[in-house]
Amino acid sequence: MKHNSKIHFSSFIVTTLFFLGCSFENERTLNTPDIYTNDTTKTAFSNMQKLNTQEEETFILGKSFFSIPWVEAPSATTARDGLGPLFNANTCKSCHQNNSAGIVLNQDATLNHSLVLRLSIAQNIHHDLINTIGFIPEPIYGVQLATNGNIKVPFEGKISVSYEKIKGNYTDGEHFELTMPTYSISHLNYGATSQNLNIAPRLALPLVGLGLLEDISAKDILKNEDVNDLDGDGISGKANKVYSPQHKIMMLGRFAYKATAVDIKHQSANAALNDMGLTNPLYPQENCTQFEKECLNAPKDEAEFDLPIQRLNAISFYLKSLQIPKSRVNKNFLEGEKIFQSLECTKCHISTFVTQTGITIHPYSDLLLHDMGKDLDDGHVDFQANTSEFRTTPLWGIGLREKLSGGLYLLHDGRARSFPEAILWHGGEAQKAKEAFKALEKQSRKYLIDFLKGL
Image 1 (spheres, rainbow, N blue to C red):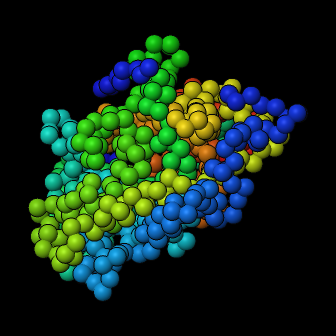
Image 2: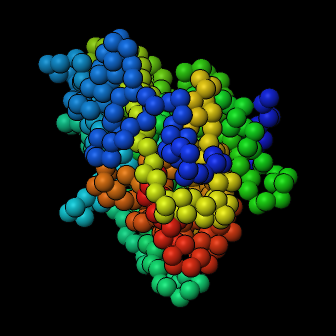
């Protein structure tokens, strides 16, 4: 089991730094005070934007369905039953502690369920499922390994991970150490997997600024595409075109590690099915394959969907309406941002967009796919995303992740335990920037990390 094309969209038609005169932070939040919060506690990702009374009620409803555990159907309650029959977690919140990113290891060194494994088969032939799912799922176990099951429904398998230490040096001689993970599956309850199975680990992403990312126009995202690197800068941003189960057409993807969800509702519905086994209007079928008879025969509620459209909409509205923590700007932050720009990190981590509703935001992402090199290649194709291509991760809020998540695990599989490690894993289109980072003097590296910690 293995762990470790390009399509061009037709094009549709830095913030200045300063100390004096007015504050830098006011410049960044001009005309948009309600979307930002000064909160730096464990509730920093959980604050509500300014809403009217009706919107507040929807926000609270969505928060409740996001936070309170689901139970197996049928049950005494019909509000939150329908969990499973196969699942990884029983609530959204358990994978997004404090609305932040997941962690790989619990305090007792066991694997946290916010890390999941996507399962696929090498695409050496055309398959109709690629048109709507994006890849060929493993025939017996489907698109994602379920590590839990309801009563009388065996779980699919268990995950284990081992790490190899990789040592290296900065140009000034200082040592660093990276950890390369290898994943495997055991305790398979429905038979052996396909011999050409590919395992792609995925760690739960933080839920920061999703509504604002959704509000960026497709035109503004696509104008940064340069699939054939016509400007010769070595950066070839590429949009992913994915199937929308709501609209039944191919659309621009902007969420998830390979930009495979078109909007918040799409991402929420997909997670509801694959992480918790909750059927919904976008994914009406149980997450059972034809080989999993106990799953197919499990008792079900009489309701049409485990997660009806009103509740799915409420969860989506809740996630859309969360505030963004303000950057903690100081002298070191500003020095670090200059270095971030000088390394040309902003060619992918674009700092500023103006949304369709006229809000200036600073997500530090272009929402496009980039080749990250062979070291991060996970063998998983997803629609137009090749095995080594990933969406540029938005960096806003990243400085608070360790506090909110209970640990710092970066990149798609959480292999990086610090900001320098995450940078040092970059390759492909980011190879030049990584080498420039390694060549920085120690104080400049510290300034850059202080900048990231302040976001």
